[in-house]
Image (cartoon, rainbow, N blue to C red; front, top):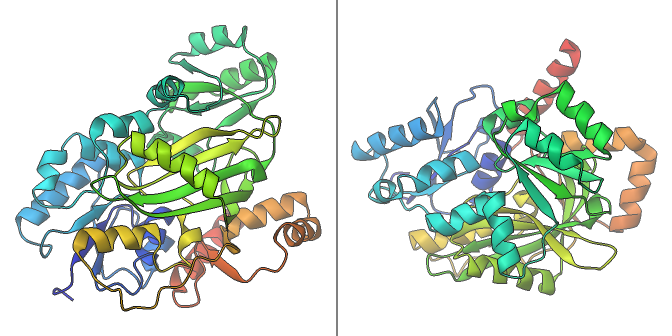
Length: 396
């Protein structure tokens, strides 16, 4: 396999890492996964040609990768793909050093940090006439309580950057929905959020359910040229309203893609990324709620029905892989992506029959599914995920 170009994916033990590896199915590359959790279902995939155990912080992992590259453990100049924000942030601090050994398709640090830091992005959006929900930044418990007295409710509270401490405690939760000043005060008394992150954004709540959340997945080359783009709509999130995607679908939305593209180009986007929107049912406007920069998104698997998905197109471009003669499947606008466990929890919470009827009414005749873990040609991750979920259930 050594004659093939090399791809290195950090976070091989995460769902996003697994999605990134599966996106390269069929390409003439060797796929190397960097992982820390030995029991992770994601590392069971047949799409990893090599798995490298590297414990430690993102900085320590990048140190180890550089040392391995210096020792010529990877052929040629590999492309390095990230699966977590923390690795993207660490890479910006040492991009010149990384560039000696790897192709690192992430945007310039200044523009990238604008997208990563919700404080800076919010200010940039206001200055560039990009619609965003009204927001305030808080950096202390006292500041949060003081701000609540002048705030319109409901609102949401979320970390400016999702830290590893946040993800450990709130694995499937992006933010907290607070309906009143009393509810906010009760929340901060029961659990100090600043032990998990040092800065938060208190943001206006846009009405509407999970299906009002939309996203655009994309890939850009080093010159800012769009290589691939896909628009999608969330249908279910778990927990509802404030969680991660449980079910989503591709949609035909050229205007939404155009809006996301214009934002990404102005921010000198390079590599993989996405922009999430919430449509305000009162005005019909799409408000930017969360950019993702330098990596795939959680629901990027919805684009895997297309051989020219953002990850595959990016890797082919940077590694100079020419496969124009291969048959490329067209994008399927009715492709549905499902996080199996989260979808089950959502359906169970509202009643399995009611949830099934809701999906059938929304989707009609469904022709193609993609799943977070389940794949007929790659069954081990799902089996391991199911075994892990069942063992947790029995241990409670």
